[in-house]
Image 1 (cartoon, rainbow, N blue to C red):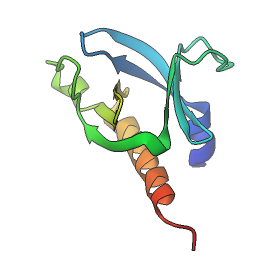
Image 2 (cartoon, rainbow, N blue to C red):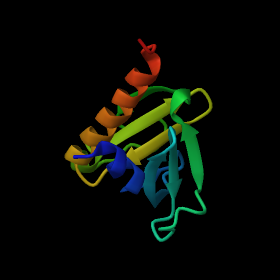
Image 3 (cartoon, rainbow, N blue to C red):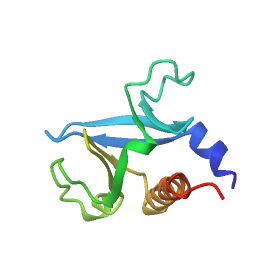
Length: 117
């Protein structure tokens, strides 16, 4: 799999809000920035938000600030992207997609932290 093309194309996630609101969002990575937008914005011209990958402090399993899900299967598909300013909480359609995205983001972060040799 070409992970660069995959993350550029994006994946549909449920974005959780601390007050319990859930919104369907297309998540994609372009030029070391993670964006989210409405799924119908296929041209990706109007992102709803963004996080620079360099601002990510850590990625954790589960929801950190949003209301916890009672459905354990859905809860196992969740992860949180933590920065100094915000926490982006996402739910993948399955645990494989969650693991794929967390691994891809963690690998990008490791490459950014490793000085060029």
